[in-house]
Image (spheres, protein in one colour):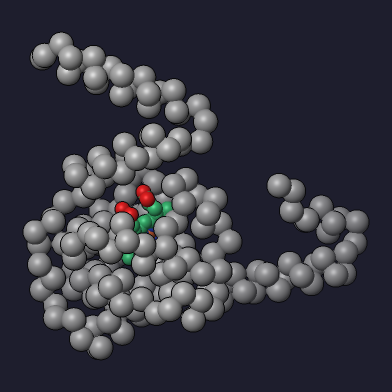
Length: 179
Ligand code: HEC
């Protein structure tokens, strides 16, 4: 191996190691991003075998609202998901330019394989292939941010929380958030 390449690799490894101790730094994130985009995520050339239509988008939306809402919200913009920003990396807004720039094949690949080691799970064996392609159509046609409200489970949680704080007994006071 050529000497300057070895040095460059060593530099990158040190840089990554240095960032590990704290939150992922900007440098690490941008290195990870370009690795993710150029190496890890495959199927760039694969075409969506299902034509986009209101029915396909609607069906994709139903799968999305069943399997993905817990992290991505009903609308794909992570609306009402209380921990979205706390995940590392955070749950992105799927309307972001970076994500919309993926080809359909890459989006399908992401859904099928997930993104290790982040919190984005793989759906192979849970969704069938056609269902994943329809979910891709939904991601291309997301409803406006906030238009579908928060997922029911988080709405109930917020209400419970309020109730607990109103009728606060000493024990329940512990429940308040400490940041
Ligand atoms: C347990 C939480 C969770 C669930 C459930 C989940 N995701 Fe994700 N998703 C994430 C996180 C966290 C990221 C950010 C990953 C990253 O940037 O490395 C992500 C990222 C993505 C991305 C963008 C990837 C990129 O490279 O920027 C897409 C597309 C996506 N998810 C689609 C889906 C779909 C479709 C479903 C349902 C079939 C789903 N996700 C279910 C947590 C989740």
